[in-house]
Image 1 (cartoon, rainbow, N blue to C red):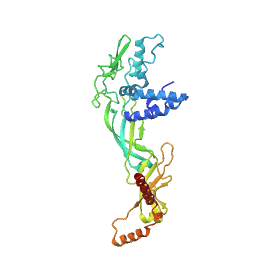
Image 2: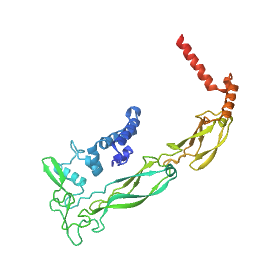
Image 3: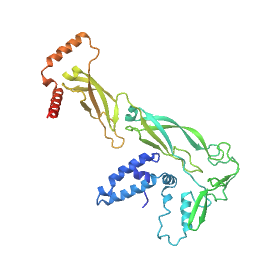
Image 4: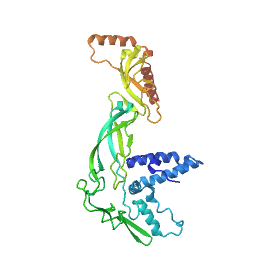
Length: 373
């Protein structure tokens, strides 16, 4: 059975760094560990798969080899202890390296184009509702003059006679085989009589490219959009790489996001908190009415269902959660201060008006009483 892609196994992308890969591995390993899934054969197999994927992607050199050659980079040890069917070791390793490095004798080495990354900054409104953005990227494109051949019009392009077009040369000593880049064609597998004046024989040129990126509704910071074939052009007619657009959502003046929920703080007056009433609060769809019950305390949360962010995967719609803050009046004139003092005097001796203060003072008294015992 064919092995799954290691990046797919860990649930990461090819552009993620070591920290992201390690974090993904730890999460999966903890979830699938045999001690937590006793008797579950499926979990045990997945745990082995995760271990194998991290053993490769968690190592810089192994990851580089895997990115270039895939699973073939690690298959040469699979036949240890027999099973070669009488084949010669040199032939076996030769076949493996031929697959790894782009073919056997007489075939040019074909290298897929590089993947590119573009960091795209958008507003919270654009992230929630979706948006189309025009971007400009620097990339390597197929040369229009020579159409990727690297040769001047009318000149010859011959297969390298030293490596027979493979771009690699192989040296065998006993059971060991060493592969290296051909020093004559520098890995291209071909000898160009007269290089193209535009690309100087590379077949590719640096170019600025304009693209339109469709950002789906519900994305968040760190999400990646993959544009197939929009990366750098490949060598020798190989397919281009992909473009990964990494999303960065700007901070918002009013709302904060946590998953699919939005949060905001709403200041209310002392009078409104005490007597109750109705206010208007902002949402990403416009203003809505929010009823404030009497005797509302600062910090109370009000949930407006369905006014948050719709998930890109489950299509679940989050909520808007408003936290009210009772605002203390400032810059009072003499009359206003006198009125407040009269009001304060009317509350003296009546603990039922201040339940939290009363409970706090009782707790302080018990604390000091216990200290004195």
